[in-house]
Image (cartoon, rainbow, N blue to C red; front, side, top):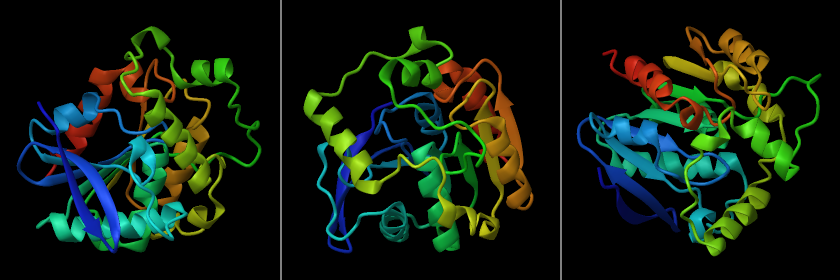
Length: 247
């Protein structure tokens, strides 16, 4: 399955996304590490039209003028959906991408038919230990099986662009207080997916969201840390596809 690079100017910003497949649309939003096309997107593209937008500034794409926060990116992506999707898409997000997906659904309920939030950042319990970004600790917390981590194919310039974008949007904060106060506004069918060994987005975060989002479903993937679909690709794909196959 080949994903094609596409661009479009939206509200004066040049947005870049990758697309594959056909059928009803699914928009998948990448984590803070940037866009890497992995098991979930590849499997979804066998059955759906999949769009993978890049947050402006990531993967050496241009920043958008006056777009400095995740809610502002959410507005841009909602407009991209309006322009590119004849049907309301399902929206999938991982980590930062799940935070972005949640913001977009709060601000633009019409932009998401169903929602999948995988290891969603921004909901860390108040009494949880501080997050560590020390490289060795960070790597251990990302993967239960670091040996399954794919080889890095991006250039040093792309990786530096991602670090710069991460700082630009301020997504290192473990708790998005503004989003926490509005998360109960999500009213579409929602699947919450957590890794059983994830200490960055612990089970308490998933349980909290389960109580706040009406009618949501919550599942844990065994033997997976924060990088759920790297640690357990088959189980993750099965959970997501089972949810999205429901009419």
